[in-house]
Length: 526
Image (cartoon, rainbow, N blue to C red; front, side, top):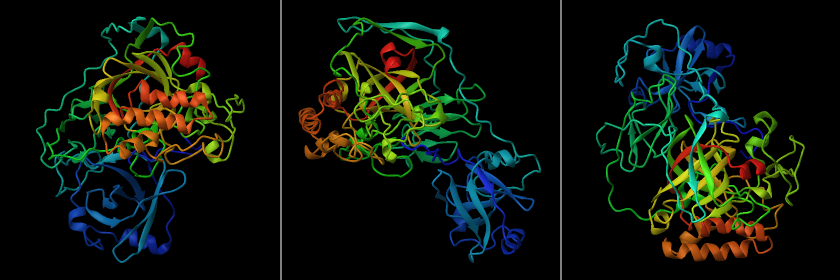
């Protein structure tokens, strides 16, 4: 989180509030009827899925459903108005609902009312209905709970994995690994390169977090296998299924910069795989072990979070989310020289203040198979101070190369000290210098570093493009750029080289993750 007032921009996790209307608007509301004063495209807009999430609001005794696409329906699902939603400075979505002739009927401001689906507020509607909708009952509108995953006590930490000094990993199964349901749906020919989500009735991106009709949180991996992160009913999202993507024709290699970075809080911009990594400088070189024992035990948390996803990277020098008082204030902040700042309310470097990421949070290499780092994780998951063991699958999110295959067997343990509200479920934004600023830049005015490469993608993104996506050129290119950009800062240079040397310049590697007991080395630096 790079701004003190950043709030979730995730549509359908927000709520609607109705402000007062003038007399003209009140009359317009009372005269709203299905199919009256509709925009020209109303015929297609009216065909919304009964299971599609929407906001519910009340105006003059009547209830209305507002959809992110700009459709406003009555409680029976009939379109009655339109709205263009925009985002204000607080992260809420606002707009004015109008009839076809432009008459305003009410103001919309996403704040604190429930997110529902039409089938919830109109029980008589079959789940598969998407067009003709019968009248709803007068049943009370259910309020969706925002149940969170219960905290895990440290006493439940078990199941060690031993990394010996010879870098041999003994893999031990953990009860923390969840059995995720597999999709039983057939391949959808209309979702080339995506997965069909039965809840929304839409094609969705790999690893993009979805919300079920009962508050489930889940995402699909690149094979469209469903990974359930949270189910209030404790059913592991078994009522949800997705469809695998149809194979596409030959595709051009994509830059790892096309992934979303947590540093782009709300804008839909192409982002580099490096853009979501925030650097974590250390007092020692990232290539040194420091005082870490070469035989380190990874202790998985029984019942902890687990799943699959991918890694990105960024470094923007901003004060991290977990350092702000309203988010616990547990994370440390430092000035540009690495001096600790004790004032928890100190302004972020990205807002002209002096508080930023501490230099002792650069990645730490223990051996060829084990490393530690800090990372941003998805907003809303309350992960501050939690740690995760990332194990790489040997594939990349957008392209798979020999560089990705070389990561198989490696363990990267990350501690969450920041959030990204546009970071998908299973995405880890590893903090690496030279990984790209993203939307905010607190480094240029304070750090005295050289070029940081592409805004979204950093130095590796430049190497990918300059080499015309020839993977065998990435590593040497990145090594040279790290040396040039951080010539006056040896510690930051070693942090940058972590991506080139330990991660082998592999952009956006796919991974599996499990919650683990945090290494003391990360606890001390947090």
